[in-house]
Image: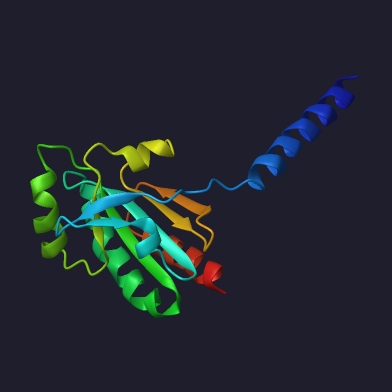
Length: 164
Protein backbone atom coordinates (compact mmCIF):
# COMPACT_ATOMS: atom_id res chain seq x y z
CA UNK A 1 0.00 0.00 0.00
CA UNK A 2 2.91 2.34 0.70
CA UNK A 3 4.16 2.05 -2.89
CA UNK A 4 0.68 2.71 -4.29
CA UNK A 5 0.24 5.81 -2.12
CA UNK A 6 3.65 7.10 -3.19
CA UNK A 7 2.81 6.57 -6.88
CA UNK A 8 -0.54 8.33 -6.47
CA UNK A 9 1.20 11.22 -4.71
CA UNK A 10 3.75 11.48 -7.50
CA UNK A 11 1.02 11.39 -10.16
CA UNK A 12 -0.88 14.15 -8.35
CA UNK A 13 2.21 16.34 -8.11
CA UNK A 14 3.08 15.78 -11.79
CA UNK A 15 -0.50 16.66 -12.82
CA UNK A 16 -0.32 19.92 -10.86
CA UNK A 17 3.06 20.79 -12.41
CA UNK A 18 1.84 20.06 -15.94
CA UNK A 19 -1.37 22.04 -15.37
CA UNK A 20 0.39 25.13 -14.02
CA UNK A 21 3.28 25.07 -16.48
CA UNK A 22 0.78 25.13 -19.34
CA UNK A 23 -0.90 28.32 -18.13
CA UNK A 24 1.42 31.26 -18.51
CA UNK A 25 0.69 34.42 -16.58
CA UNK A 26 -0.41 37.21 -18.93
CA UNK A 27 0.73 40.82 -18.45
CA UNK A 28 -2.00 43.29 -19.27
CA UNK A 29 -1.21 46.66 -20.78
CA UNK A 30 -0.18 49.40 -18.35
CA UNK A 31 0.97 53.00 -18.61
CA UNK A 32 3.71 54.68 -16.59
CA UNK A 33 5.75 57.85 -16.88
CA UNK A 34 9.14 57.62 -18.53
CA UNK A 35 12.19 59.65 -17.48
CA UNK A 36 10.88 62.60 -19.50
CA UNK A 37 7.63 62.47 -17.47
CA UNK A 38 5.64 61.33 -20.54
CA UNK A 39 2.99 58.66 -20.05
CA UNK A 40 3.82 55.59 -22.15
CA UNK A 41 2.23 52.15 -22.32
CA UNK A 42 3.57 48.64 -22.53
CA UNK A 43 1.74 48.35 -25.85
CA UNK A 44 3.85 51.24 -27.23
CA UNK A 45 7.14 49.81 -25.97
CA UNK A 46 6.82 46.05 -26.34
CA UNK A 47 9.14 44.20 -28.68
CA UNK A 48 7.97 42.47 -31.86
CA UNK A 49 9.00 39.05 -30.51
CA UNK A 50 10.10 39.47 -26.88
CA UNK A 51 9.84 42.11 -24.20
CA UNK A 52 12.18 42.06 -21.23
CA UNK A 53 11.02 43.99 -18.17
CA UNK A 54 13.52 44.64 -15.40
CA UNK A 55 12.06 45.81 -12.07
CA UNK A 56 14.74 47.70 -10.16
CA UNK A 57 15.43 50.47 -7.65
CA UNK A 58 18.23 53.02 -7.32
CA UNK A 59 19.12 51.83 -3.80
CA UNK A 60 19.49 48.18 -4.94
CA UNK A 61 23.16 47.32 -5.57
CA UNK A 62 22.43 44.11 -7.54
CA UNK A 63 20.02 46.14 -9.69
CA UNK A 64 22.61 48.73 -10.65
CA UNK A 65 25.17 45.96 -11.31
CA UNK A 66 22.72 44.17 -13.60
CA UNK A 67 21.63 47.17 -15.65
CA UNK A 68 24.83 47.68 -17.72
CA UNK A 69 24.87 43.92 -18.48
CA UNK A 70 21.21 44.08 -19.50
CA UNK A 71 21.99 47.09 -21.67
CA UNK A 72 24.62 45.01 -23.50
CA UNK A 73 22.04 42.25 -24.06
CA UNK A 74 19.53 44.85 -25.27
CA UNK A 75 22.08 46.23 -27.75
CA UNK A 76 22.83 42.73 -29.05
CA UNK A 77 19.22 41.66 -29.59
CA UNK A 78 17.16 44.82 -30.23
CA UNK A 79 17.36 44.30 -33.99
CA UNK A 80 15.97 40.77 -33.61
CA UNK A 81 12.58 41.81 -32.21
CA UNK A 82 13.48 42.33 -28.54
CA UNK A 83 12.77 45.41 -26.50
CA UNK A 84 13.83 45.93 -22.92
CA UNK A 85 12.06 48.13 -20.38
CA UNK A 86 13.42 49.11 -17.00
CA UNK A 87 10.79 49.87 -14.37
CA UNK A 88 12.06 51.76 -11.36
CA UNK A 89 10.15 50.97 -8.19
CA UNK A 90 11.74 53.78 -6.22
CA UNK A 91 9.54 55.47 -3.65
CA UNK A 92 8.88 59.19 -3.21
CA UNK A 93 12.19 59.70 -1.36
CA UNK A 94 14.42 58.24 -4.08
CA UNK A 95 12.45 58.63 -7.33
CA UNK A 96 14.39 61.81 -8.16
CA UNK A 97 17.56 59.68 -8.53
CA UNK A 98 16.18 57.50 -11.34
CA UNK A 99 17.26 59.75 -14.22
CA UNK A 100 20.71 60.31 -12.75
CA UNK A 101 21.31 56.57 -12.17
CA UNK A 102 20.08 55.48 -15.60
CA UNK A 103 22.14 58.22 -17.30
CA UNK A 104 25.28 57.46 -15.30
CA UNK A 105 24.97 53.79 -16.24
CA UNK A 106 24.39 54.81 -19.89
CA UNK A 107 21.19 52.80 -20.22
CA UNK A 108 19.79 52.93 -23.75
CA UNK A 109 16.49 51.11 -23.17
CA UNK A 110 13.39 52.95 -21.89
CA UNK A 111 13.11 53.52 -18.14
CA UNK A 112 9.67 53.92 -16.57
CA UNK A 113 8.79 55.06 -13.05
CA UNK A 114 6.37 53.10 -10.85
CA UNK A 115 6.46 54.95 -7.52
CA UNK A 116 3.86 52.72 -5.88
CA UNK A 117 5.30 49.55 -7.43
CA UNK A 118 1.81 48.69 -8.67
CA UNK A 119 2.94 46.85 -11.79
CA UNK A 120 5.46 44.66 -9.98
CA UNK A 121 3.05 43.97 -7.11
CA UNK A 122 0.27 42.99 -9.52
CA UNK A 123 2.28 39.88 -10.40
CA UNK A 124 3.39 39.24 -6.80
CA UNK A 125 7.11 39.67 -7.43
CA UNK A 126 8.95 40.63 -4.27
CA UNK A 127 12.68 40.60 -4.97
CA UNK A 128 14.86 43.30 -6.49
CA UNK A 129 15.84 43.03 -9.21
CA UNK A 130 13.20 40.88 -10.88
CA UNK A 131 13.44 40.39 -14.62
CA UNK A 132 10.64 38.91 -16.69
CA UNK A 133 10.49 38.00 -20.35
CA UNK A 134 7.22 38.31 -22.23
CA UNK A 135 6.42 36.62 -25.51
CA UNK A 136 4.60 38.45 -28.31
CA UNK A 137 1.21 37.77 -26.64
CA UNK A 138 2.55 39.30 -23.38
CA UNK A 139 2.68 35.98 -21.55
CA UNK A 140 5.43 35.64 -18.97
CA UNK A 141 7.77 32.96 -20.32
CA UNK A 142 10.73 33.50 -17.98
CA UNK A 143 11.33 35.02 -14.54
CA UNK A 144 14.71 35.75 -12.95
CA UNK A 145 14.96 37.15 -9.42
CA UNK A 146 18.10 38.70 -7.97
CA UNK A 147 21.40 39.22 -9.72
CA UNK A 148 24.92 37.95 -9.20
CA UNK A 149 27.80 38.04 -11.64
CA UNK A 150 27.20 35.43 -14.33
CA UNK A 151 23.40 35.71 -14.30
CA UNK A 152 23.62 37.81 -17.46
CA UNK A 153 24.81 34.68 -19.29
CA UNK A 154 21.74 32.70 -18.19
CA UNK A 155 19.46 35.56 -19.17
CA UNK A 156 21.11 35.98 -22.57
CA UNK A 157 20.93 32.22 -23.23
CA UNK A 158 17.21 32.27 -22.42
CA UNK A 159 16.62 35.24 -24.75
CA UNK A 160 18.59 33.61 -27.57
CA UNK A 161 16.62 30.37 -27.20
CA UNK A 162 13.28 32.18 -27.14
CA UNK A 163 14.14 34.21 -30.24
CA UNK A 164 14.86 31.05 -32.28
